[in-house]
Image (cartoon, rainbow, N blue to C red; front, side, top):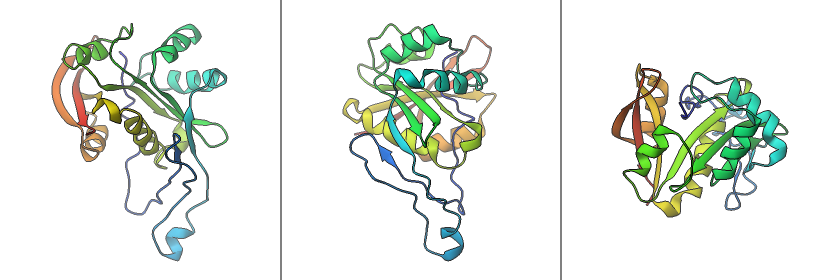
Length: 206
């Protein structure tokens, strides 16, 4: 199964500092930001996270992150990663000195063999398909998944629609809530080869 890592997303909490950073060329020079108050400000370590395009030199780090998250994404090897990255538009990494996370987005009309991707292709003429987002375990709940989602949605705004899938049976409660809060709505369900069922989600970007 090829899917978003729905159990890896960062769920915002009320006392968690918000991280902001570069997201493609339109979101430059954005740094760690916290709400007013000395206690909250002291929690910010001023770590700059850059959201940038994937490069072949990122392959080893991305492959390691992917293979550590196989409960939510399909497996990759070097050959398949290279092939898949060549289909993406865009492929993004979160970089804070090392690769802390990544996201792959695809448009319709590629040779990608994911049943979930093809489900959306059969129903929509144009969209950005959020194939997978993975965040390093040590960097979760620090806003990195939110930054990757922001950048992915920005990149797909011209298509008017961002789509992805999340397990609904058994339910991934946290991921479903995260996507709901971002404006994703269920547009169907699809039984997976592993016997689980995914909610097929879409967000209007217009």
